[in-house]
Image (cartoon, rainbow, N blue to C red; front, top):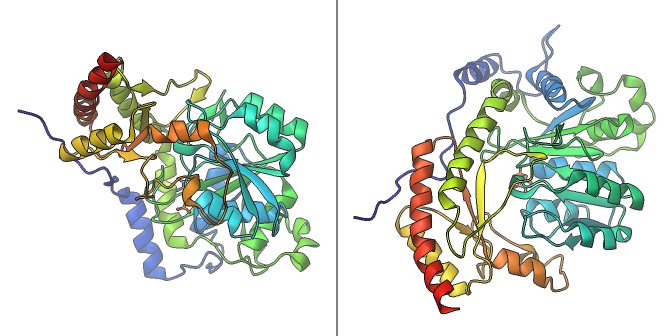
Length: 401
Ligand SMILES: *Cc1c(COP(=O)(O)O)cnc(C)c1O
């Protein structure tokens, strides 16, 4: 009998009881706006910012309404404006080019390698085309940040990091989000902390931090922050910075703070699940694993593999066969964008010249979520199902060559 997986790829863990209690307390007192504070009260949002600044080692932190809002705010703080080209990854999620487009600026895509990171040779060749790189650590794969930083420094490129999938990860011991000028994180349900929607921004730059606080809609109450620059830093900027409201509220911050306390153990639990899948899928003909560099401390909250150079029909067959056995694979090579898997050609508001090397990778790229509601045994079962479905077809393909 063929086995079938019955777990849900979209079911996250519940919110910790402590977070539920804090949320209920906030609803009882009713002060849900971050600046609506009782005398002597710091507020959950300011405390979350302080906690997250400490977690990442950043001087400043700002909590906002979403990861997409965080990136747009970072770009705006850097003065990116209409028509300006901004370099970014061809392999990323729609909110990344969307953040650039929201300012009337123009996404300029840099290709992806078989390691699923930004192509650094291409970045080096094109670094002169823009002032800012919005770097997406898509699906948690971190490029060689030493080389990337050297390229960007040499070209005068300012880096904003999109750490939606690397909260809790690091490169050579430096937390993801701390290599560039600004790091942006998401606390949307499918990321590493869950407040439904939400975002966090970190930076060491006083002026950028002050600008982003004003942009997020501080109503001149910036002295109620705890992880922001001192009031003097806002003196000049407050006259010239528009309010583009996108604050985080008390309720979300209340449920995030207890999650941040257990984030390191959650990250380890994700990576343990990832390693079980990886071990189960090693050595299957036709299936390419993404080898993780030693310098990278990654968070295995999702898993990717490649069926490189397989015909589209054969990949579609694998996807369908796995789905029939309860394993939901997302395919970046499908004709139409579905679910979360759109690719650069789907973003027709920002057309790109053909990128054959990137197309080859995306055509063979399969992806799955690994929620923490999966046990290690679940992951082993998923690996068995995928290896059977890929293995049979891969062996036939190898034999036919
Ligand atoms: C989820 C995600 C974001 C941010 O998304 P929001 O839904 O706006 O919080 C940014 N980049 C990537 C790669 C993502 O997956």
